[in-house]
Figure 1 (spheres, one colour):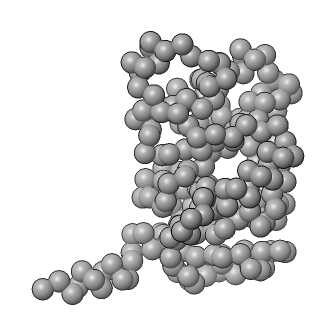
Figure 2 (cartoon, one colour):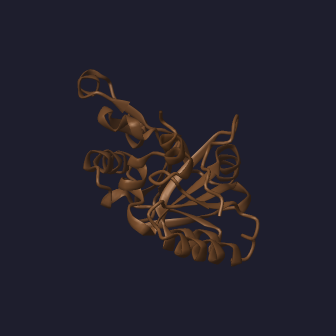
Figure 3 (cartoon, one colour):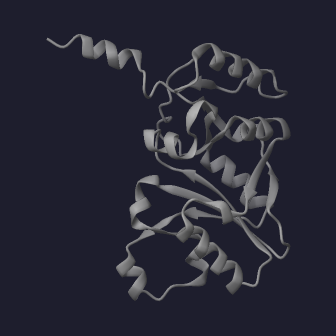
Length: 215
């Protein structure tokens, strides 16, 4: 199984850290699911989105989060912990070109602000879904936001498999089980040619070999 998870040079990508059931649903149904942010860990974040919903008199505001930064230990541990975690790397231009042409989804990078700035700034309600506290800046989050008059908890949007650049299995799953998951993914209709690998972030053979060569 391929191990490298290096970002392609000159290609903008978005990473979505999630779990295996969500991945299988995404690939089998070819759907991207936006969810109600009410259960997010960062209550400042979900509160701002709820304020936006109230100010705009909407039934629901649904969202989905990605990161624009390369693979990090933080993202694995926080957003895809344990042996059920996976990371889907999307081709940013292809994904946004498809979604924004066919839907009313808003897309944008999170804006990280210090409390002092928010305290003195004239905030716009339109910015609320993309504002986060400065302490979260290392996440380099990119977000999709969907407004609806209906009281929805989730909504699916079509996802061409061509928008997926690579799928990376978490670094803690036993290699034999990772190979089995790789087989399962490749057996799904249309997924035969997807690039699937396992992260070597916490157990990289070359890194350890280079250390052994120290004089």
